[in-house]
Image (cartoon, rainbow, N blue to C red):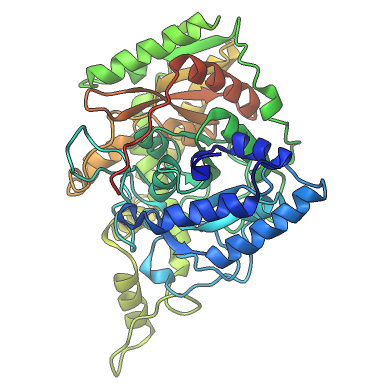
Length: 494
Protein backbone atom coordinates (compact mmCIF):
# COMPACT_ATOMS: atom_id res chain seq x y z
CA UNK A 1 0.00 0.00 0.00
CA UNK A 2 2.96 2.35 -0.30
CA UNK A 3 4.03 4.53 2.61
CA UNK A 4 1.57 3.60 5.34
CA UNK A 5 2.41 6.57 7.58
CA UNK A 6 1.01 8.88 4.87
CA UNK A 7 -2.51 7.47 5.21
CA UNK A 8 -5.26 9.42 6.93
CA UNK A 9 -7.50 7.93 9.61
CA UNK A 10 -10.39 7.11 7.24
CA UNK A 11 -8.17 5.41 4.63
CA UNK A 12 -6.25 3.46 7.26
CA UNK A 13 -9.45 2.37 9.02
CA UNK A 14 -10.93 1.10 5.76
CA UNK A 15 -7.68 -0.72 4.87
CA UNK A 16 -7.61 -2.35 8.33
CA UNK A 17 -11.21 -3.51 7.97
CA UNK A 18 -10.65 -5.31 4.67
CA UNK A 19 -7.35 -6.79 5.83
CA UNK A 20 -5.08 -4.91 3.40
CA UNK A 21 -2.90 -3.83 6.30
CA UNK A 22 -2.47 -4.54 10.01
CA UNK A 23 -2.22 -2.09 12.89
CA UNK A 24 1.23 -3.50 13.65
CA UNK A 25 2.38 -2.58 10.10
CA UNK A 26 0.88 0.92 10.36
CA UNK A 27 2.49 1.43 13.76
CA UNK A 28 5.93 0.22 12.63
CA UNK A 29 5.77 2.58 9.61
CA UNK A 30 5.07 5.53 11.93
CA UNK A 31 7.72 4.51 14.49
CA UNK A 32 10.34 4.30 11.73
CA UNK A 33 9.33 7.74 10.46
CA UNK A 34 9.51 9.25 13.99
CA UNK A 35 12.99 7.82 14.45
CA UNK A 36 14.24 9.65 11.37
CA UNK A 37 12.55 12.96 12.18
CA UNK A 38 14.60 14.22 15.11
CA UNK A 39 15.15 17.54 13.33
CA UNK A 40 11.44 18.39 13.77
CA UNK A 41 11.57 17.78 17.55
CA UNK A 42 7.85 16.91 17.44
CA UNK A 43 7.85 13.75 19.59
CA UNK A 44 9.42 14.30 23.01
CA UNK A 45 8.53 11.09 24.88
CA UNK A 46 8.55 8.03 22.62
CA UNK A 47 6.51 5.00 23.68
CA UNK A 48 7.32 2.34 21.04
CA UNK A 49 6.78 -0.64 23.37
CA UNK A 50 3.35 0.61 24.43
CA UNK A 51 2.48 1.31 20.78
CA UNK A 52 3.47 -2.19 19.63
CA UNK A 53 1.44 -3.85 22.39
CA UNK A 54 -1.60 -1.69 21.64
CA UNK A 55 -1.28 -2.39 17.89
CA UNK A 56 -1.19 -6.16 18.47
CA UNK A 57 -4.27 -5.89 20.72
CA UNK A 58 -6.05 -3.78 18.09
CA UNK A 59 -5.33 -6.37 15.38
CA UNK A 60 -6.89 -9.05 17.60
CA UNK A 61 -9.92 -6.84 18.19
CA UNK A 62 -10.36 -6.18 14.46
CA UNK A 63 -10.04 -9.91 13.71
CA UNK A 64 -12.75 -10.60 16.29
CA UNK A 65 -15.05 -8.12 14.55
CA UNK A 66 -15.21 -5.81 17.56
CA UNK A 67 -13.59 -2.62 16.30
CA UNK A 68 -14.69 1.01 16.66
CA UNK A 69 -13.58 3.50 13.99
CA UNK A 70 -10.30 4.47 15.74
CA UNK A 71 -9.23 0.87 16.40
CA UNK A 72 -5.63 0.21 15.33
CA UNK A 73 -4.88 3.78 14.25
CA UNK A 74 -1.51 5.20 15.46
CA UNK A 75 -1.73 8.73 16.89
CA UNK A 76 0.33 11.17 18.95
CA UNK A 77 -0.78 12.65 22.29
CA UNK A 78 0.04 16.25 23.25
CA UNK A 79 2.20 16.41 26.37
CA UNK A 80 -0.61 18.30 28.18
CA UNK A 81 -2.65 15.08 28.54
CA UNK A 82 -1.82 12.91 31.54
CA UNK A 83 -0.97 9.39 30.34
CA UNK A 84 -0.60 6.62 32.90
CA UNK A 85 3.02 5.70 33.61
CA UNK A 86 4.29 7.95 30.77
CA UNK A 87 5.99 11.33 31.40
CA UNK A 88 3.43 14.16 31.25
CA UNK A 89 5.31 17.42 31.65
CA UNK A 90 3.16 20.03 29.87
CA UNK A 91 6.40 21.14 28.22
CA UNK A 92 7.69 22.44 31.57
CA UNK A 93 10.72 21.76 33.75
CA UNK A 94 8.58 22.03 36.88
CA UNK A 95 6.83 18.72 36.02
CA UNK A 96 10.07 16.87 35.31
CA UNK A 97 9.80 13.26 36.44
CA UNK A 98 6.01 13.36 36.82
CA UNK A 99 4.54 9.96 35.86
CA UNK A 100 0.75 10.09 36.35
CA UNK A 101 -0.99 7.16 38.02
CA UNK A 102 -4.07 7.81 35.87
CA UNK A 103 -5.12 8.45 32.27
CA UNK A 104 -6.85 11.64 31.10
CA UNK A 105 -10.45 11.03 30.04
CA UNK A 106 -9.79 12.04 26.42
CA UNK A 107 -6.76 9.76 26.00
CA UNK A 108 -8.65 6.97 27.82
CA UNK A 109 -11.58 7.39 25.39
CA UNK A 110 -9.16 7.06 22.48
CA UNK A 111 -7.45 4.01 23.99
CA UNK A 112 -10.86 2.43 24.68
CA UNK A 113 -11.63 2.98 21.00
CA UNK A 114 -8.48 1.01 20.14
CA UNK A 115 -6.20 3.90 19.14
CA UNK A 116 -2.44 3.32 19.36
CA UNK A 117 -0.30 5.86 21.26
CA UNK A 118 3.05 6.45 19.53
CA UNK A 119 4.29 8.92 22.15
CA UNK A 120 3.92 12.40 23.61
CA UNK A 121 4.20 15.56 21.52
CA UNK A 122 6.06 18.84 22.00
CA UNK A 123 4.15 21.96 23.02
CA UNK A 124 4.59 25.44 24.48
CA UNK A 125 5.13 25.34 28.24
CA UNK A 126 1.74 24.92 29.95
CA UNK A 127 0.20 25.66 26.52
CA UNK A 128 1.29 29.31 26.79
CA UNK A 129 2.59 30.40 23.42
CA UNK A 130 1.84 30.77 19.71
CA UNK A 131 5.10 29.42 18.28
CA UNK A 132 6.24 26.40 20.33
CA UNK A 133 9.32 28.35 21.45
CA UNK A 134 8.57 28.23 25.21
CA UNK A 135 8.99 24.45 25.57
CA UNK A 136 11.48 22.87 27.96
CA UNK A 137 12.22 20.39 25.14
CA UNK A 138 13.29 23.14 22.74
CA UNK A 139 11.48 24.38 19.64
CA UNK A 140 9.24 22.16 17.55
CA UNK A 141 9.94 22.82 13.88
CA UNK A 142 7.49 23.20 10.99
CA UNK A 143 8.09 20.63 8.21
CA UNK A 144 7.26 23.38 5.66
CA UNK A 145 9.88 25.80 4.36
CA UNK A 146 9.72 29.04 2.37
CA UNK A 147 10.70 28.03 -1.15
CA UNK A 148 14.36 27.04 -1.13
CA UNK A 149 15.07 28.93 2.10
CA UNK A 150 16.47 26.69 4.85
CA UNK A 151 15.34 28.94 7.75
CA UNK A 152 13.38 26.95 10.34
CA UNK A 153 9.75 28.04 10.70
CA UNK A 154 7.39 27.78 13.64
CA UNK A 155 4.67 25.12 13.45
CA UNK A 156 2.51 27.46 15.58
CA UNK A 157 1.54 26.97 19.18
CA UNK A 158 0.81 25.74 21.65
CA UNK A 159 0.05 22.42 19.88
CA UNK A 160 3.13 22.81 17.65
CA UNK A 161 4.45 19.27 18.09
CA UNK A 162 1.03 17.84 17.20
CA UNK A 163 0.77 20.00 14.06
CA UNK A 164 4.32 19.24 12.94
CA UNK A 165 3.90 15.47 13.49
CA UNK A 166 0.64 15.26 11.53
CA UNK A 167 1.88 17.48 8.66
CA UNK A 168 5.10 15.44 8.38
CA UNK A 169 3.19 12.11 8.44
CA UNK A 170 4.89 10.93 11.65
CA UNK A 171 1.46 9.86 12.89
CA UNK A 172 -2.01 9.58 11.37
CA UNK A 173 -3.49 12.22 13.70
CA UNK A 174 -2.85 13.85 17.09
CA UNK A 175 -4.62 15.38 20.04
CA UNK A 176 -4.35 19.10 20.66
CA UNK A 177 -5.78 21.61 23.11
CA UNK A 178 -7.07 25.08 22.36
CA UNK A 179 -7.29 27.93 24.91
CA UNK A 180 -7.07 30.87 22.50
CA UNK A 181 -6.28 29.21 19.15
CA UNK A 182 -3.75 26.51 20.04
CA UNK A 183 -5.32 23.90 17.73
CA UNK A 184 -6.48 26.14 14.89
CA UNK A 185 -3.41 28.38 14.50
CA UNK A 186 -0.85 25.50 14.28
CA UNK A 187 -3.22 23.61 11.94
CA UNK A 188 -3.29 26.64 9.62
CA UNK A 189 0.52 27.05 9.80
CA UNK A 190 1.14 23.42 8.79
CA UNK A 191 -1.61 22.78 6.22
CA UNK A 192 -3.71 20.38 8.30
CA UNK A 193 -7.22 20.41 9.82
CA UNK A 194 -7.87 21.21 13.46
CA UNK A 195 -11.17 21.56 15.32
CA UNK A 196 -11.82 23.09 18.74
CA UNK A 197 -15.21 21.72 19.84
CA UNK A 198 -17.77 23.58 21.96
CA UNK A 199 -16.56 24.18 25.52
CA UNK A 200 -17.71 21.15 27.51
CA UNK A 201 -17.87 18.72 24.56
CA UNK A 202 -14.55 17.05 25.52
CA UNK A 203 -13.65 16.34 29.13
CA UNK A 204 -10.85 18.41 30.66
CA UNK A 205 -10.17 15.82 33.37
CA UNK A 206 -6.51 14.79 33.33
CA UNK A 207 -5.54 17.65 30.99
CA UNK A 208 -3.03 19.95 32.73
CA UNK A 209 -4.95 23.20 33.24
CA UNK A 210 -3.95 26.56 31.76
CA UNK A 211 -7.17 28.63 31.82
CA UNK A 212 -10.01 26.40 32.96
CA UNK A 213 -12.90 28.40 31.46
CA UNK A 214 -11.23 28.48 28.02
CA UNK A 215 -9.30 25.18 27.60
CA UNK A 216 -10.77 22.56 25.28
CA UNK A 217 -9.27 19.44 23.68
CA UNK A 218 -9.73 18.53 20.03
CA UNK A 219 -8.25 16.51 17.14
CA UNK A 220 -5.58 17.59 14.64
CA UNK A 221 -5.87 15.55 11.45
CA UNK A 222 -5.09 15.29 7.75
CA UNK A 223 -8.68 15.93 6.61
CA UNK A 224 -12.13 17.03 7.76
CA UNK A 225 -13.40 13.43 7.62
CA UNK A 226 -10.55 12.34 9.89
CA UNK A 227 -11.43 15.17 12.29
CA UNK A 228 -15.04 13.93 12.44
CA UNK A 229 -13.91 10.34 13.17
CA UNK A 230 -11.46 11.32 15.90
CA UNK A 231 -13.67 13.96 17.53
CA UNK A 232 -16.46 11.42 18.04
CA UNK A 233 -14.02 9.10 19.84
CA UNK A 234 -12.70 11.94 22.07
CA UNK A 235 -16.07 13.36 23.16
CA UNK A 236 -18.54 12.21 25.76
CA UNK A 237 -19.95 13.18 29.13
CA UNK A 238 -17.54 12.81 32.04
CA UNK A 239 -18.83 13.04 35.64
CA UNK A 240 -15.23 13.80 36.74
CA UNK A 241 -15.39 17.17 34.91
CA UNK A 242 -18.05 19.53 36.23
CA UNK A 243 -18.00 21.51 32.96
CA UNK A 244 -18.53 18.40 30.79
CA UNK A 245 -21.82 18.49 28.89
CA UNK A 246 -24.23 15.60 29.35
CA UNK A 247 -25.24 15.47 25.69
CA UNK A 248 -25.31 12.55 23.26
CA UNK A 249 -22.37 12.44 20.84
CA UNK A 250 -23.60 12.21 17.25
CA UNK A 251 -21.94 10.23 14.48
CA UNK A 252 -20.08 13.22 13.05
CA UNK A 253 -18.76 11.31 10.04
CA UNK A 254 -22.28 10.35 8.96
CA UNK A 255 -23.16 14.05 8.84
CA UNK A 256 -20.55 14.77 6.13
CA UNK A 257 -22.78 15.08 3.07
CA UNK A 258 -21.07 18.13 1.59
CA UNK A 259 -24.52 19.60 0.97
CA UNK A 260 -24.67 23.15 2.31
CA UNK A 261 -27.35 24.52 -0.04
CA UNK A 262 -29.31 27.28 1.65
CA UNK A 263 -26.90 27.59 4.59
CA UNK A 264 -26.16 31.15 5.69
CA UNK A 265 -22.47 31.94 6.15
CA UNK A 266 -21.59 35.18 7.95
CA UNK A 267 -18.60 37.37 7.06
CA UNK A 268 -17.78 39.64 10.05
CA UNK A 269 -16.66 43.11 9.00
CA UNK A 270 -14.64 43.54 12.23
CA UNK A 271 -12.17 40.84 11.13
CA UNK A 272 -10.90 43.09 8.33
CA UNK A 273 -7.83 44.29 10.18
CA UNK A 274 -5.55 47.19 9.26
CA UNK A 275 -2.39 45.93 7.66
CA UNK A 276 -3.81 42.47 6.93
CA UNK A 277 -1.68 40.85 4.20
CA UNK A 278 -3.31 40.90 0.76
CA UNK A 279 -2.85 37.12 0.52
CA UNK A 280 -5.03 36.61 3.61
CA UNK A 281 -7.70 39.02 2.27
CA UNK A 282 -7.71 37.20 -1.08
CA UNK A 283 -7.92 33.77 0.55
CA UNK A 284 -10.87 34.92 2.66
CA UNK A 285 -12.69 36.25 -0.40
CA UNK A 286 -11.90 33.02 -2.29
CA UNK A 287 -13.27 30.97 0.63
CA UNK A 288 -16.53 32.92 0.58
CA UNK A 289 -16.77 32.37 -3.20
CA UNK A 290 -16.21 28.61 -2.74
CA UNK A 291 -19.01 28.38 -0.17
CA UNK A 292 -21.30 30.45 -2.40
CA UNK A 293 -20.44 28.09 -5.24
CA UNK A 294 -21.49 25.19 -2.98
CA UNK A 295 -24.93 26.75 -2.60
CA UNK A 296 -24.52 28.73 0.62
CA UNK A 297 -25.71 32.30 1.05
CA UNK A 298 -22.96 34.73 2.08
CA UNK A 299 -24.14 37.42 4.52
CA UNK A 300 -22.22 40.41 5.91
CA UNK A 301 -22.47 40.45 9.70
CA UNK A 302 -21.18 42.52 12.61
CA UNK A 303 -19.53 41.32 15.82
CA UNK A 304 -19.04 44.77 17.37
CA UNK A 305 -16.99 43.81 20.44
CA UNK A 306 -14.33 41.87 18.49
CA UNK A 307 -11.68 44.57 19.03
CA UNK A 308 -11.83 44.01 22.80
CA UNK A 309 -11.45 40.22 22.61
CA UNK A 310 -7.64 40.04 22.61
CA UNK A 311 -7.09 42.45 25.54
CA UNK A 312 -9.87 40.76 27.56
CA UNK A 313 -8.41 37.32 26.79
CA UNK A 314 -4.96 38.40 27.98
CA UNK A 315 -6.51 39.42 31.31
CA UNK A 316 -8.74 36.37 31.86
CA UNK A 317 -6.32 33.65 30.67
CA UNK A 318 -3.33 34.79 32.80
CA UNK A 319 -5.64 35.30 35.81
CA UNK A 320 -6.83 31.70 35.57
CA UNK A 321 -3.27 30.53 34.86
CA UNK A 322 -1.87 32.20 37.99
CA UNK A 323 -4.54 30.44 40.02
CA UNK A 324 -4.05 27.03 38.34
CA UNK A 325 -0.26 27.14 38.50
CA UNK A 326 -0.17 27.99 42.22
CA UNK A 327 -0.15 24.23 42.94
CA UNK A 328 3.34 23.80 41.44
CA UNK A 329 5.30 24.68 44.53
CA UNK A 330 7.94 21.99 44.98
CA UNK A 331 6.00 20.18 47.69
CA UNK A 332 3.91 17.47 46.09
CA UNK A 333 5.36 16.40 42.73
CA UNK A 334 7.67 17.54 39.96
CA UNK A 335 10.74 19.72 40.33
CA UNK A 336 12.01 21.00 43.68
CA UNK A 337 14.94 23.42 43.85
CA UNK A 338 18.04 22.57 45.86
CA UNK A 339 17.95 24.66 49.01
CA UNK A 340 20.75 26.35 50.91
CA UNK A 341 21.24 25.83 54.63
CA UNK A 342 18.81 28.08 56.46
CA UNK A 343 16.32 28.36 53.59
CA UNK A 344 12.70 28.14 54.71
CA UNK A 345 9.47 27.28 52.93
CA UNK A 346 9.23 30.72 51.27
CA UNK A 347 12.70 30.32 49.72
CA UNK A 348 11.73 26.83 48.54
CA UNK A 349 8.65 28.18 46.75
CA UNK A 350 10.56 31.07 45.22
CA UNK A 351 13.54 29.04 44.00
CA UNK A 352 11.43 26.13 42.74
CA UNK A 353 9.09 28.33 40.72
CA UNK A 354 11.93 30.51 39.41
CA UNK A 355 13.79 27.41 38.17
CA UNK A 356 10.77 25.42 37.09
CA UNK A 357 8.83 27.99 35.06
CA UNK A 358 10.09 29.54 31.83
CA UNK A 359 9.98 33.27 31.05
CA UNK A 360 6.59 33.29 29.27
CA UNK A 361 4.87 31.32 32.04
CA UNK A 362 6.42 33.63 34.64
CA UNK A 363 5.21 36.65 32.64
CA UNK A 364 1.64 35.37 32.52
CA UNK A 365 1.57 34.33 36.18
CA UNK A 366 2.74 37.84 37.11
CA UNK A 367 0.09 39.47 34.91
CA UNK A 368 -2.58 37.15 36.30
CA UNK A 369 -1.61 37.77 39.91
CA UNK A 370 -1.61 41.52 39.27
CA UNK A 371 -5.11 41.64 37.69
CA UNK A 372 -6.51 39.50 40.53
CA UNK A 373 -4.95 41.62 43.29
CA UNK A 374 -7.22 43.59 45.61
CA UNK A 375 -6.71 47.01 44.06
CA UNK A 376 -7.05 45.92 40.43
CA UNK A 377 -9.62 43.10 40.47
CA UNK A 378 -12.52 45.33 39.41
CA UNK A 379 -10.50 47.47 37.04
CA UNK A 380 -9.14 44.53 35.06
CA UNK A 381 -10.52 41.08 35.80
CA UNK A 382 -14.16 41.98 36.37
CA UNK A 383 -14.17 44.33 33.39
CA UNK A 384 -12.68 41.62 31.18
CA UNK A 385 -15.40 39.20 32.31
CA UNK A 386 -18.05 41.75 31.30
CA UNK A 387 -16.42 42.18 27.89
CA UNK A 388 -16.45 38.40 27.52
CA UNK A 389 -20.22 38.39 28.09
CA UNK A 390 -20.63 41.04 25.38
CA UNK A 391 -18.52 39.02 22.93
CA UNK A 392 -20.67 35.94 23.62
CA UNK A 393 -23.81 38.02 23.10
CA UNK A 394 -22.50 39.29 19.73
CA UNK A 395 -22.35 35.69 18.50
CA UNK A 396 -25.76 34.83 19.99
CA UNK A 397 -27.32 37.82 18.21
CA UNK A 398 -25.78 36.81 14.88
CA UNK A 399 -26.86 33.16 15.20
CA UNK A 400 -30.37 34.33 16.15
CA UNK A 401 -30.67 35.91 12.69
CA UNK A 402 -30.33 32.46 11.09
CA UNK A 403 -26.57 32.43 10.41
CA UNK A 404 -25.31 28.81 10.36
CA UNK A 405 -21.55 29.44 10.42
CA UNK A 406 -19.07 32.30 10.27
CA UNK A 407 -16.08 32.40 7.90
CA UNK A 408 -12.87 34.20 8.92
CA UNK A 409 -9.13 33.88 8.32
CA UNK A 410 -7.47 31.46 10.76
CA UNK A 411 -4.27 33.48 11.22
CA UNK A 412 -3.03 36.96 10.30
CA UNK A 413 -0.06 35.49 8.37
CA UNK A 414 1.57 32.28 7.19
CA UNK A 415 4.12 30.55 9.46
CA UNK A 416 6.96 32.85 10.51
CA UNK A 417 10.58 32.00 11.29
CA UNK A 418 11.58 30.69 14.71
CA UNK A 419 13.02 33.59 16.68
CA UNK A 420 11.38 36.24 14.47
CA UNK A 421 8.73 37.32 16.99
CA UNK A 422 9.90 35.82 20.28
CA UNK A 423 11.38 39.07 21.65
CA UNK A 424 8.07 40.97 21.34
CA UNK A 425 5.29 39.37 23.42
CA UNK A 426 2.57 41.71 22.10
CA UNK A 427 3.46 40.88 18.48
CA UNK A 428 3.27 37.19 19.43
CA UNK A 429 -0.12 37.62 21.14
CA UNK A 430 -1.53 39.17 17.94
CA UNK A 431 -1.30 35.72 16.31
CA UNK A 432 -4.48 34.86 18.24
CA UNK A 433 -6.49 37.79 16.89
CA UNK A 434 -8.91 35.66 14.81
CA UNK A 435 -9.16 32.72 17.21
CA UNK A 436 -9.61 34.00 20.79
CA UNK A 437 -13.21 35.18 20.30
CA UNK A 438 -14.25 31.55 19.77
CA UNK A 439 -12.80 30.49 23.15
CA UNK A 440 -14.25 33.52 24.91
CA UNK A 441 -17.72 32.55 23.63
CA UNK A 442 -17.20 28.78 24.11
CA UNK A 443 -18.06 28.06 20.46
CA UNK A 444 -16.78 25.37 18.09
CA UNK A 445 -14.24 26.49 15.47
CA UNK A 446 -12.34 24.64 12.77
CA UNK A 447 -9.29 25.56 10.68
CA UNK A 448 -9.16 24.14 7.15
CA UNK A 449 -6.16 24.50 4.80
CA UNK A 450 -7.37 26.50 1.82
CA UNK A 451 -4.42 27.91 -0.11
CA UNK A 452 -0.76 28.89 -0.25
CA UNK A 453 1.08 32.16 0.10
CA UNK A 454 3.63 33.48 -2.40
CA UNK A 455 6.46 31.63 -0.64
CA UNK A 456 4.73 28.25 -0.87
CA UNK A 457 3.48 28.12 2.72
CA UNK A 458 -0.01 26.89 3.64
CA UNK A 459 -2.78 29.28 4.67
CA UNK A 460 -5.94 28.31 6.54
CA UNK A 461 -9.50 29.56 6.85
CA UNK A 462 -11.58 29.32 10.02
CA UNK A 463 -15.25 28.40 10.29
CA UNK A 464 -17.07 29.17 13.54
CA UNK A 465 -20.25 27.21 14.34
CA UNK A 466 -23.23 27.30 16.64
CA UNK A 467 -22.75 25.76 20.10
CA UNK A 468 -23.00 21.92 20.11
CA UNK A 469 -23.41 21.81 16.32
CA UNK A 470 -19.98 20.38 15.47
CA UNK A 471 -21.60 18.01 12.97
CA UNK A 472 -23.05 20.89 10.95
CA UNK A 473 -19.77 22.83 11.24
CA UNK A 474 -17.75 19.82 10.04
CA UNK A 475 -20.08 19.43 7.08
CA UNK A 476 -19.59 23.09 6.06
CA UNK A 477 -15.82 22.59 6.46
CA UNK A 478 -16.11 19.43 4.33
CA UNK A 479 -17.73 21.44 1.53
CA UNK A 480 -15.03 24.12 1.81
CA UNK A 481 -12.26 21.50 1.83
CA UNK A 482 -13.66 19.84 -1.31
CA UNK A 483 -13.69 23.13 -3.22
CA UNK A 484 -10.34 24.40 -1.92
CA UNK A 485 -8.74 21.12 -3.05
CA UNK A 486 -5.67 21.61 -0.86
CA UNK A 487 -3.43 18.56 -1.28
CA UNK A 488 0.06 20.08 -0.96
CA UNK A 489 2.56 18.41 1.37
CA UNK A 490 5.90 19.72 2.66
CA UNK A 491 8.96 18.51 0.79
CA UNK A 492 11.00 16.22 3.01
CA UNK A 493 14.22 17.85 4.24
CA UNK A 494 14.42 16.43 7.79
